[in-house]
Image (cartoon, rainbow, N blue to C red):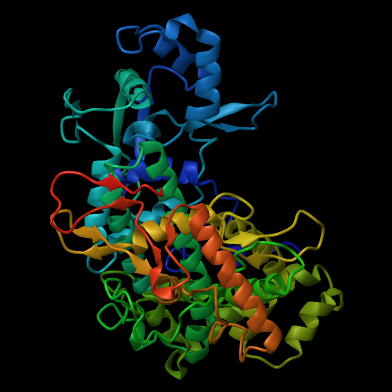
Length: 562
């Protein structure tokens, strides 16, 4: 059955900017750089060349004063550029093309092929999430700007020649003279929505600031990978929380005062209880070994199943709020409702479910419902699809009937798309993964904690506020690390979560959790953070890879065990 576009419309930036498709973080970061450059707006680019591998190769060959020795090995140079510096779509196929250079410098976005470098709303989601963080959002954006645009005066576009940069950045800056226009695209007003969970924004901003403490001491390419993993991880956590929170708000028919900007209990600088009394926390049980078939894997599968099982409920809740938003605009046009200065918040829209708006609401959705039923029945009312007829016979209000029909017809497709997006945000089966799934038909997903993701989170964990750099590093005991993962991110390793599909642990569960803890220590050792001087528990510590003293003003020392 074909629905009209107005009936099918699902995307609502008040809840999420994502278009829910396969998301590639290289392309997200590239697009984000334009928004960072232009204060939240996308860019309009005009350049004299197309972006091809040959263009970049020639740039190296034609400037031996900048890239000495490269002209002796043009074929090796081309292969190096293709494999290390370019984000390629359809790699190895006749349709292979460059999406953009890898986002090692802020001006990478100037050389993206827009049609090949789609971010599906993720860059805007990251920028606006940081922008609306309560304390450190703008600070996080400014620090990202300084990291990605080193030595660049963004007002004059002039580069400080005394700034030390790597060879890849030199090549990119050399090509910049072929860009004749780079301005903010203000053809549309910036759509800046507060996140449904402002606490998630606070946590993302704080983590970005913490991670960038290491920017002068970690290779630039490694730091970019860290940022991609961290930002993807936080987008995944936000949407897992959204899937839990939004249906509950619709059920209560109002916003929760706990989630108001001034009331949200999230305090990212509180390392022992950053979520405060948040009633909407997300809990994940991670299989550290990542071995299918074990009891621990079964528990981690249950954890993933609970969160993915909420997607259909989210689809219905999002449709409900989306259609109420359309109803609100209808009332504004009729002069029966005044639009707030900052637009309708989710709480404002849910108030339209109150009895005072019943007559207007039923009249509006009665018309919508009639259109859906007419499309469904064709020439004869007897031809109405059985599933739609069953909903009509339930005796619901016109609004509820309309929502049930739309969800019944559209939910399966949206669920597939959301699963695809969530798989990519959780970096399924990839470096930095929070999710794994065997490459076998009908296999189950399970929550994991990949070594690369653990490495990023540990770099953040060992930092404490204070010192000339804003933070200093400290050793941590194993139980402190486990507490950090549980309380800050909801990731459980050595015990079952208190919610989200779990209850009391059985004897078999406890045995699996003990093995998981032992494997966690092994993983810590593999990523170079774990030190155990003896069997004594107090000597088993997580040691910072880079030691930053509280009184340090000059350098960071890499630990021997890194």
